[in-house]
Image (cartoon, rainbow, N blue to C red; front, side, top):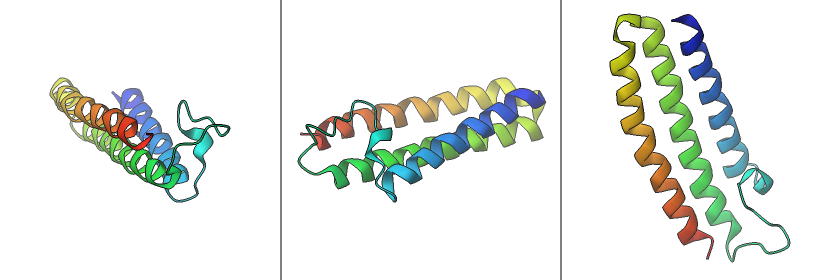
Length: 102
């Protein structure tokens, strides 16, 4: 169970790192579908929303990876809990992004 937990931690770090770059460093090109020729009315607001939720999802993945490494016998339960956390967070991210992109 080492590789799945390492993979989850790496994916979480990448997601949180991209969220930080989007939110704090204003790297708008990392936002899927962002077109610099037609920017949204308030790109800072969109970047803040996407960045914060990317960090939340990345932290959730890292936590699941650490939990699987510590409790490999409970991996199925941990993955189900992770899914019930990440799926709503992804939906909130998408819905909020649509609202902030207009």
